Amino acid sequence: MTSSSSTQVVPDVALVPRHVAIIMDGNGRWATKRFMPRVAGHVKGVEAVRGIVEACAKQGVEYVTFFAFSSENWRRPQDEVSLLMRLFMTALEREVAKMHANGIRLKIVGDLSRFDDKLQNMIASAERKTAANTRLTVTICANYGGRWDIMQAVNKMVASDPGVSDFSEEQLAPHLSLAYAPEPDLFIRTGGEERISNFLLWQLAYTELYFTDTYWPDFDAAALGLAISSYQQRERRFGRTSAQLNEQVPEAKC
Ligand code: IPE
Ligand code: IPE
Ligand code: MG
Image 1 (cartoon, rainbow, N blue to C red):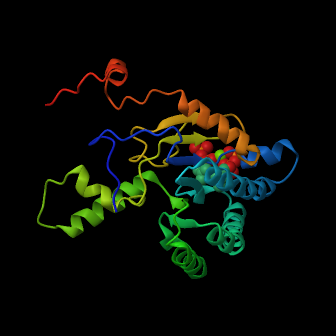
Image 2: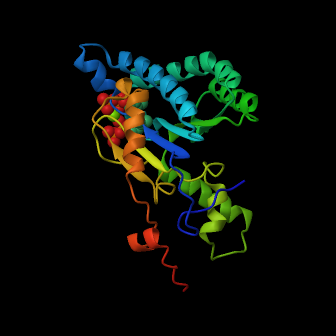
């Protein structure tokens, strides 16, 4: 099923964000500050993911999406890249059974073709195993880039209807890699940087943005609670005026 688009239809806004998308940044600096190797920060970062998945399930969030490895992270030193791959495999091995037992559906999105066969098979089997779970959908973006996502969707859309020259948003949306989820309500970036770093470029059109200096390994349930409280103070207008929201002034028809 494809979720509706915030630029086509004004979405219903719930008190708890339905979909939270997170750039987990600051693992390396967390470790360096403690005179530890960067890898120690990544190991701690995996633990933080576990805590936030649990907290999201408790809070009633329906979808949580984590940026784990960007299409630009291949530019890092070879040993850090291999270590991140190994950590990803170990985490899959260790966590999938538990997630399944807790009613969690796991999705991995990104250009997976660059991963070795063993990892690709593990990903496919984790997704198959958890496909029918409905409590919370956890998406891991791996070798993901927002531009890659849009381009792969455009290519699929054009291939699906080669005769057409004038496509619409609605025709593109089902081909985007997160088409199974509503657009994120809340975006969180830890680690102090205030940028999108080629994350969900299309899907963040009307998402509320939240930046915190907290390094990812320190981001816990309480920190998530603060982000959600900040979200709850926002007025999501989707192009309308405040008065329209508060006084139910009817929308103009074009
Ligand atoms: C985020 O932490 C994890 C990945 C990008 C894989 P970083 O590794 O970017 O940590 P900093 O930003 O260098 O502190
Ligand atoms: C963004 O973090 C990517 C992930 C968290 C996977 P980076 O650390 O790679 O982002 P930049 O390079 O600081 O923008
Ligand atoms: Mg970083």
